[in-house]
Structures are given as C-alpha cells and as structure tokens.
Length: 285
Image 1 (cartoon, rainbow, N blue to C red):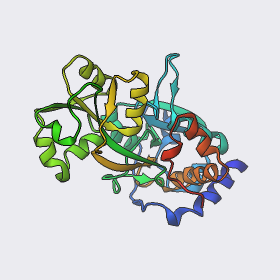
Image 2: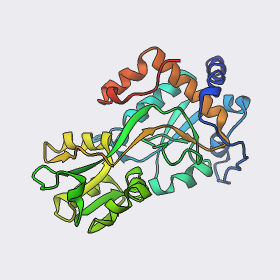
Image 3: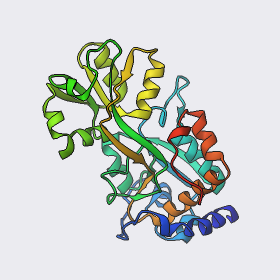
Image 4: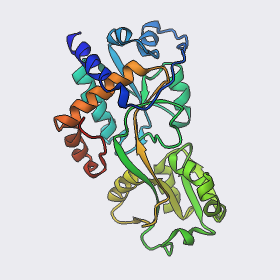
C-alpha cells in the first residue's frame, strides 16, 4: 500500500500538465464476476484507486511492436513492457486483455479494461478519452512492394489501398485534408489486421497498405526487403494511453509512474529494446 500511496501523491503533482478530462460519472456494466468489475470500474477518487489490485490493459494482439502474440503464444510488445513496469512499481498485477479494435470503446466503458494502451493515437480523439501525455511520435505512411512503380502519393491514383478498420490511417484517409487523394483510389479496402493487409498485397489483391510507421518498420524487417515505405507521409500523430473520461485518478497515477521511468532512464531502455528510442517524446519533468 505504501508504494501505491507514494505513486498517487507523485501523480497528483503532474495533473496540471495533463490533457483535460471530463468529470461525468460512468457506471460499470454488471458481470458475473463482481470483484473483477469493481476492480476495473472507472475511478476518479485516489482512495478508490488505492484499493485496486489489478491493472487491465486492452490491446490489439496483432499490432507489433506495440502489442502482439509471439511465436511462443505469449503477449509481448513495447506498450505491454511499459505497462508491466508501471504495474511492478505500483504493486499491481498486470492483466493483458486482447480486444477487437473496433470494440475498444465498449470494452473501456463497460469496465472490462482499465485503459487502451497499444499504439493508440491521440490526434482526432482528444475529447473522447482521458489521455496520458503523448509519449511516442508516430506517422501514417504508405507501404508498397519493393518492385512497385508507385513512388509518390500521386501514383496511388487508380490503385487498391488496404487499411485496418477503425485505425488512424483510415481516419487520415477519410479526413477533409485527404479527400482528393482517397477519391483517386480504385478502392479502399478495410481489413481486421495488418497481417491480413500484407497477405492481400502478397496475393496481388492490393497495391498499397496505409499504416503506422512503427508497425510498418517492424513488418518490413520481418519480410526481408519485400516492401518499402514511400517517402511522402500520409499524416503525423502522437500516441498516448487512453482512459475513460472520468478516470482521472488512475490516469494520474500511471502518468506519474511514466514520468519516473523517463527520469531514471527505464523508459528509453524499454524503447531501445523495441527499436523505438528515436520516437520517444515524453520528457523529464
């Protein structure tokens, strides 16, 4: 309990610097496991947060290097390593909860998960969640076959572009800024995950994948030079940890711990493990 109490006090010191969050109440959904529901409910009271024993992270299990299932059947990734370190310092048990990405809001509002932590874009969602500070700088890019004749965004006209459903890349393509570009495509196809997207490209059913640059780099390393990233980006963005709007106390506690990890170098060490050290933007307070 002492470790948690210290974490809460440190967290409250950084509240003023965080993204504003709503104060509306949210009732957790009824489940058969009442203890689990009570432990994961949205909380805006530091004393209630101190009674938690678990911390449940919702993530897309096919989104490397941020969160995915490895060859041994284990859930691993950069964001999951960050979450584990936070839990170790606060005395929580980390629960890794894979979710359908298009059902993430339902999972969060029902109390099934405490947060969405998996390469989660803040841009365009600023008012929908109670956010941590941005910690990773990311961009949306286009990936094509290494021997493709597509070299610029102008070359995408008449091509079939694949994107993950409810992803930041899809939102960017559907934005007013990119309406002309998207309208030039022969087709924009939505798939459930990026492994499927690359399978479509390999089978000749698609010409381009629009996706996060961190995930794109991971996929390119795994696929031995078969694909390349276009120099022209689709959009720029930053990642954060998203909590229910009323869940300020838990957000503050997690943010305070992330700040400690930046200050003592642990955060960057974890980023280096996953090749993301150059993308870290969270700074020492």
